Image (cartoon, rainbow, N blue to C red; front, top):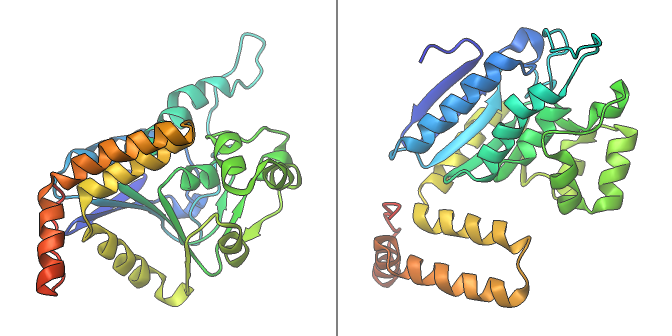
Amino acid sequence: MSLTTLRCTIEGPVATIALARPDKLNALNGTMHAELREMLERCEQDEAVRVVVVTGEGRAFSSGQDLTENLPKDEKGRIDLGPPLARDYNPLVLKLANYSKVTIAALNGPAVGASMNIALACDIVVAARSAYLQEAFAKIALVPDAGGTWILPRLVGPKQALALMLTAEPIPAEEALRMGLIFKVFDDASFPVDVAAFAAGIAAGPGLAQRLTKQAVAQSLSNDLQAQLELEAQLQREAGFSRDFLEGVTAFREKRAPRFEGR
């Protein structure tokens, strides 16, 4: 596939997808959405890939929607943002939410507007120290989208989420770390190296158990305790039947690092 808005590299079990419109601060347009969905699908189908990193080129992760793009209009000539959400943003967020492999959003710079919510839809978010997150929709009189009104309240609570949306204040990386929006902050100078090492460490883990853990956490949002306990037992049985579990126990007994296969 010839990519015009992304750069994709694969090193061992880690695929890195970089948003590559640095002159536009990696603003999201229809082409980028289509290429991103396609690359996520390809990485998911590639058995050698265990972790997918989404990052940006240049100074930003992404500035959000490209407002210079020709957006559709309704019969009265008004810009209609419904079709782009249905065609591009909603499928992308659902893809990330249901992705079978571990996804890492690596914020090399600001993640603004919809790109903040796309980052939060990934499993893990890490950031450069100079990066920040911003629900910037109020600045242009819009409602947060790309799953932001669902994801953010579940991470920081409805009151805090609403304040972040209504004020559109930027959240520096260190503050986002304290709030639980991101997992780690790396120094700017070593960011690419640190992200690569972090992703490689996760990719060396038990892929099947990681997938089952993702499933358990996702379903916990709607399960009561009894249902969650039953789900844990079901998933634990599946994990216990795996070759990775046998390898993990064997490695523990032999006092060596496990060599997981992801099955």
